[in-house]
Length: 200
Image 1 (cartoon, rainbow, N blue to C red):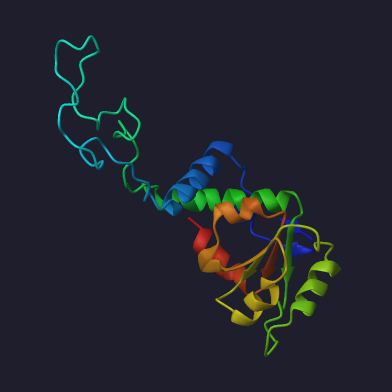
Image 2: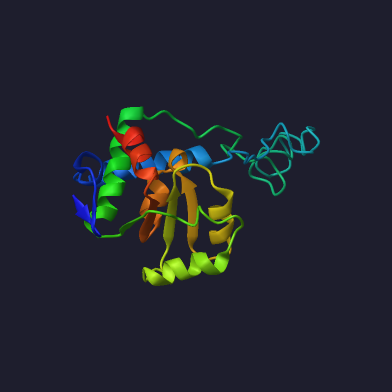
């Protein structure tokens, strides 16, 4: 498949996207990110006297036990959230298919740009050069995902102060961030690693 003058492998960049698979993987990713530290107090945990607040009979009022019951202000919460782990399993093969579909979505929209050198020759970060690179491709006002072969601090720091720009090595490439971006800037050397990671 030819995208912006670069030949890309069909088994990775020309896969028919299926919305339900992409949705499954994005939902899985977001579930894994959740902290799950939310917590409410039950009637046994609130700081209240457990003494019966009025006699059972003779007052003309409804029967009540302790002030900690959920119907009172300051009482416990019934069926409230408790700390839990939201993570669940999704097969590796399924995730690889979704990754290929997400990349194919961008390829079909001509939103993938493969660059021979992605500021990797710089000795120190240069935000100005990073911005000029985006401007040259007409991406200065777009959401851009920059994909490098390996973790590269010079490239990461060069793009860090540019709004709506993320930098990820191939090992961190994921469906959520690919779909978030309007365009992908991929380092030439990263392509081979993408093929290794995504091929079934």
